[in-house]
Every structure is written in structure tokens, then in C-alpha cells.
Image (cartoon, rainbow, N blue to C red; front, side):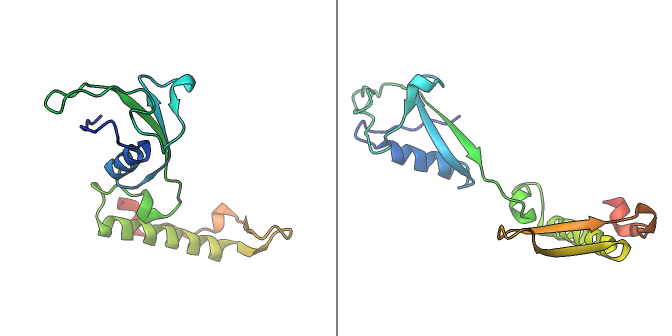
Length: 146
């Protein structure tokens, strides 16, 4: 939760930008709601001002409090750097995770086969793996601890 003092001439897209900024730019598909989260309260036209959508202002020294709720989608990615916590993981932690994933993939390659290529003309890449778990080498000591 956070609060801002805005003029009634503020456009809704400005509020969307402030919300995105508040989340470090990592969210998308932000939806604004007036008073409560309900489909009838969605503020669709982000070009409208607060006044246009019915928010009443107050004098500059005594602004009226109004509530705008928002919902959003988190950024969707499989990149280890983007998935790591910005406050909890150091570069060293991320490097260890990437190295462990690379080592696991290398073990799978030595134990089985990884085929990569076009799967049916869809333009995407599909990998098929055939493994025998007994053929996997044991994990290294470094990866057992972390």
C-alpha cells in the first residue's frame, strides 16, 4: 500500500506508471479499480483524468482521500537473474545457481541424449531427453551443500 497526492487533472496512465515504478518496472497488465476490486469498477480508459472518472478533489491544503485499487500480472520469465530476489541474492548466489543448472544439464547429456531441433514445423524448439537415472554421475560436493 502506498499513497500519493494528485491533482484531479492527473491522467490514469500516470497512476499506472507510478504503480509500475513502485514495483521496480517488473509488472505488467495493470488494472485500476475505483473504490473496490470489482469488474464494475474497472477504470478502462487510461487517458481519462481522475476528474473524468468521478474522483472529487479538495483544496490544496486539505486534499480529499480517495482509494484506487490495482491488480497486475508479474513479469513472466525463466531467466535466473530475473527470477532471483533483488534483495536476497547476490551475484555469487545467482552464479552458483546457474553453474549448478549447467552441471545438471551436462550430467544429463553424458547419461542420455538430448536432441534439439524443429518439432513439427511450428518454429519452436523442443528437446527430448532419454535417461537412465542409474547412469547419472553423483553430484559434486559443492552442489550437495547449496
